[in-house]
Length: 585
Image (cartoon, rainbow, N blue to C red; front, side, top):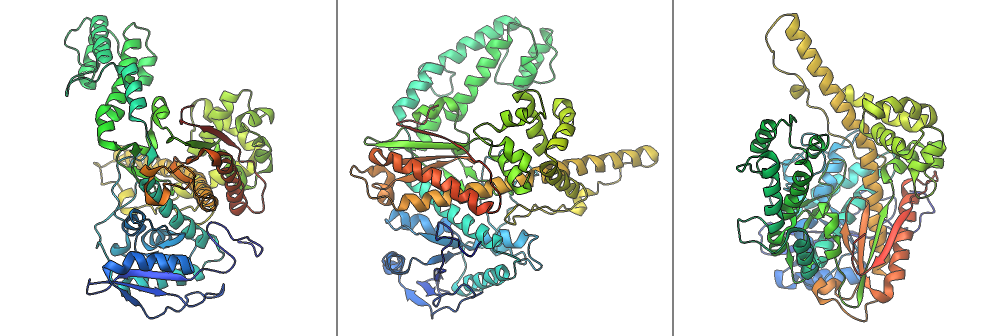
């Protein structure tokens, strides 16, 4: 942070006091200790003697301290601590999540002496949807003690502040503050819920699938398509819901594809392809977001998934149940504001390539990033001849594509954008050699397990040795692709965290609504609030009269996040922003 940094979402000129909160060792009450008046030079401020607070006084005492001091609430995990407060109408401005920050400070390569691994401080979230492939981006979770007594919490807090004091600069502290603010946002979005119209959702399902079928039956439109598939394959017994049986039926009909994937089928010229692809599309809608999903996940006009802050090792979020990060485009019109309210939606165009340009300080790539379409800028630079080529090669450079069209064009990118390409190439090289890489703020990739890298002997002789060497090279290349992308995706996730924090900070300052939205809960019924976050997109639910103010808050937040993450470099991060009663595009 620079010396002239303004007070904002994740820091302020005078550090706030810390309020450490945990259960008493006897389990009969809560203990709260507030740090002495802090100064910027204090590594670990002194704590007051803990105040013992009974369960029936706890919420009121938290509210009092929040109003009086607005401290940085230091707790084991906001996942369990914050929801009861929100239910009771208590909102926290800032916090320090010890479990989330332990993971950062344990794994970072930015510290000479990272925190020692400790099972009781390892997160134990269980989640069901992560876009990257298993084995590369999943969180390693272990069984852990559900709670900690006050002395354990204070000890971990002191260890974390002492570790941060040894960091070479303030970036790790910024990451911990942003991660903890993200955890506040995650719980607040669950509490407020995403406004969802059951009627609009049912209308979309009926248009696409037909009337709601009986339990266990297919919708009418899928029945029609299944009949067409059977007719084209001349096989009345074919089951399009069973990939093995469908594949055998295709082979019997002379369609020799290797799988029933959309890509494989789209290469085939046969009348069965169109109804089969349509069937697969509708089957996904029916299974993932059909009437059963609506019954399970939408209550009183709200979809309330569980968001998992930083659950992917790059720092990206995941969610537990409901598919919050994978809402189909055709269902977005079911996301509808309450009467008297509206939705302000914003997403960033090509966030990761822009982050790559900024973190590598590649001025040529930053020139290409000026305006709404970075890929058109790459074409203007002369690196490639078309926007399609630009998209392939830029994504290929970040994800390690070395074959096909992307592999052919990458050398051109290296000549036009040498600094950007050097950054990802170096990251890949480190990964191939078994090393770790870090994001701009200091989140570090998992260390390779040397034991798992060594395959057991497979026979003997030259052929076996060659096979083992080939497997080792393949694993090294896979690891290199992972670390190549880690530095970019992880830094983009940091930008998004700062953006979220800045939006939240600005929305808090808006006045109460004239027309409340009661279903949003006691904290957000009359306050503009974040309702959805999807990697590089946000939706704010706000009173209609505050739509322009909320839109401006989102724009200012993006500018502030960019300035905070890249203070010495200029990069355009344009937003596609819409104000509408629904989230359809």
